[in-house]
Structures are given as structure tokens and as C-alpha cells.
Length: 146
Image (tube, rainbow, N blue to C red; front, side, top):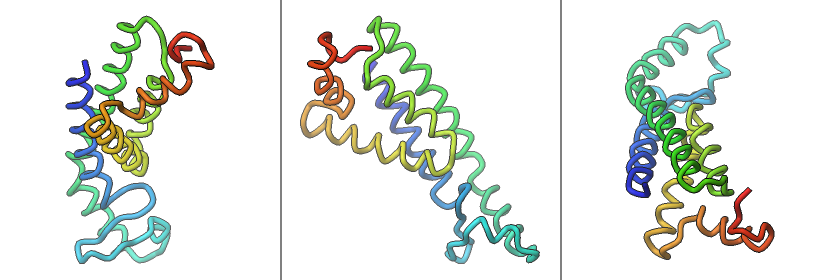
């Protein structure tokens, strides 16, 4: 299951970052590289709205795939919970990250978390979720399950 989660996390991070780094609910980057706040869309200048829609169209497919990977992440976490027979704190973090991946800025945070999580696992042998479960284990007495 770890390999499936790794693939889903990598693909979700890639599509989330690709689809939302230049266009999301807070800002967009115009074709000329200028960063614009979405607050400017209330302006009567139609050039901003046109630019916003062009950039949105450019990244639409990546956003669709990002949402598909977020759904798959929710499903794989559900399967992991069923296989463990209990909900661990790491499951809650994974569900939260998958859930916020549906928003533009949230997918950037979730992608950053996933990259950090995988980096910890590669370099230390334990993911951030593993560490969270171990840290909470003494408080719950059963490996950090809830």
C-alpha cells in the first residue's frame, strides 16, 4: 500500500502544483509573468478577467487530474484505515491533506507536506505520519490509534 500511496502522492503533488501554482483562488500569474490578486477581478477592467480566464483554461486539465488524485488519496487512506482496523493520527493528517487538495492554495500546502513526508521517509526510514503515530502512542497506549 505504501507504493500506491507514494504514486498517488507524487502524482497529486505534481498536478496540484502544476495546476494551482499559477492560478488559484487568491492570485494568478499573467502570461507576461505579472502576479495579480483575484481582488482585481472586481475591477471594471475586462483585461484582468480575460487574463484570469486564459490562465485558468491553460491549467484546467492539471486541476482535473489534481482533483482525481485527491479523490484517490481519500480512497487509499480509507483502504489503509480498513486494513489497520483503526484510525491513527497519521490517517487523519492524510485525510486532511487530501481534503484540502481540492482547493488551489490547499493543494500547494498538501503537495509541500507530501514532499516533506516522503523526504523524511527516504532519509530517516520513518515518515512524518509514522513519527506522529509513535509520538502519540504513549498517550493512547495502543500505538496512537483513536
